[in-house]
Image 1: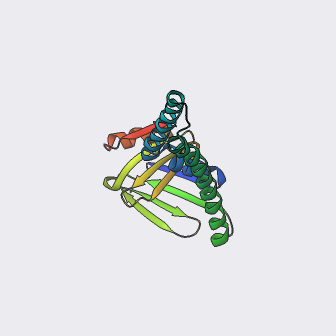
Image 2: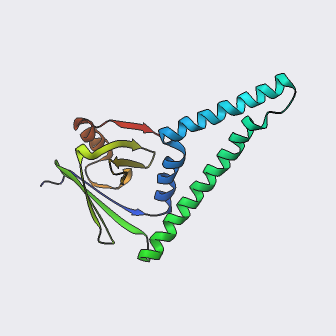
Image 3: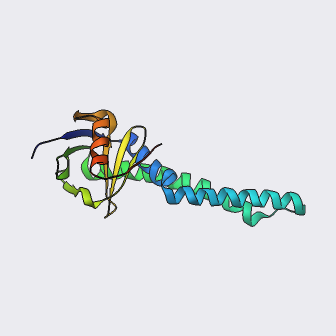
Length: 170
């Protein structure tokens, strides 16, 4: 099998912040929930203005939700980094090899995963990474500036030609 793309990166705190930032703040479900919280907050403020009494049940949802999500984000980033150091003693090196048929991910821990293109549920790009989410909810990460074979734009075009929609650039 001919290697079309190769990507190498270290799973460090930068990766953890970016990955968990997407999960906690930019995932479609979370965006919908954030919009609902904002609407509840606005309804609470408007209700307080027109009825001359504070409507805490509406306002409290937003006041509890946002600090809670930030707490979960920070906890997940720190847990991810502690887990990697505890289990492996260092940051994990990831290598992804893309061929016409599969994507193969291997890590410095010896773990190897394979992803068929028809098992890709969603592709999301952030400023620094491209995330492929599989049907089993496994995340395959490509660091944009770490392609040793091919380039980011060529890889995104390759995915598009495979019929895979790439979402956003957050």
